[in-house]
Length: 258
Image (cartoon, rainbow, N blue to C red):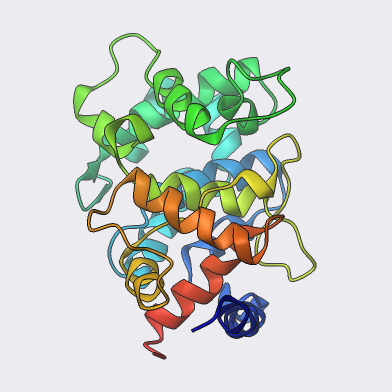
C-alpha cells in the first residue's frame, strides 16, 4: 500500500477516534474529571501508569484512588498529615500496591514544592536548550523520580525508560495527553515547553499489531527502537503531529476493524 493511501486511511481513522465520545471508555477520562492543572497532571500520570489490563478496571481503580484522596488529589498530596495516609493503605492494581502509591505521593509533594507543573520533571538538563530530546527526557525523568532518599526498590519497575530498552508506553501516552493540542477535546494540550512533533507514539499490543500490518514496524523485537521506528514512520505522514495516529492505530486494534 502506497504511503499516501496509508495516510489517507489513517487520517480518516484519526478523525473517527479523536472525538469526545472516545473519552468515557478510556483511562483519559480520569484526568478529564478535573479542572485544576495539578489534578489533571497527577491523575493523568497515575492513570497512565496504571493503564494495564482492561480499561474498565483501570478506570474503576483510579476512581477508587480519587475517593481515597478525598476527591482532590493535589490538595491531599500537599496538605495531608501522616495519619491521612492510612486512607491509601490496601490500594492495589495488578503489581502496583500501597508501597508504590505512598512513594508516588511523596514524589509529587516534593516536586510541587519546587515546581508549579509536572512538565518541569521532563525538562531536567534541557531547560534552556531550545530543543528537547525526548529520549533523554525520559531517562532523566526516571532518575529524578527516584532521587528521593529511601525510595522502595520495588517501585522502580513502574517507571520505565529508554535506557532499559522499554517502549515506555505509559509515560509516552501521558505525554501525549498533556502536550498534544487540537480542537477535538480529547488530549489536554496544557503543556507548551514540550513540542508535540517530538512526542513518541505509545506502543502497546493493539498499536503494534496494527502498525505491523501497515509496515510501520518491521523490527522483530518490541522495545525502544520499535517505538522510535514507528514514530519516525508516522512523522513521514505528519511531521508536526505524528502521535495523532495513536488514535487510529489503537482504535483499529481495540475495535478489531482490520
